[in-house]
Image 1 (cartoon, rainbow, N blue to C red):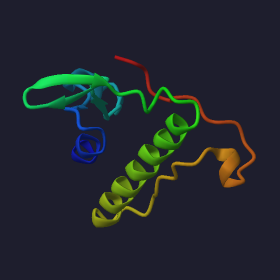
Image 2 (tube, rainbow, N blue to C red):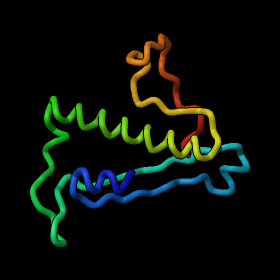
Image 3 (cartoon, rainbow, N blue to C red):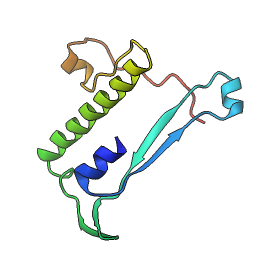
Length: 111
């Protein structure tokens, strides 16, 4: 996903995976998650260039966010399949999936 973002926006991406520390695991906290962070400027020839405005645009920004979510779901689902896990991720909202229920709250405690 990081490489996809680098190519898409021509900017560096910092990818970090957070795993619960031993103490949290002993308490049953299994909050593994990843963060992808990137600057809001294009990067070229070892320097930052103009600001990336595409995500700020009311129309194009929403389309780009949707594409990012769709791409993430595709990468994640491929990895889940490869690992033999039946669960799949759907990037669409519950409403757009035709599911009539309230979104669930996070079930784990924050560290």
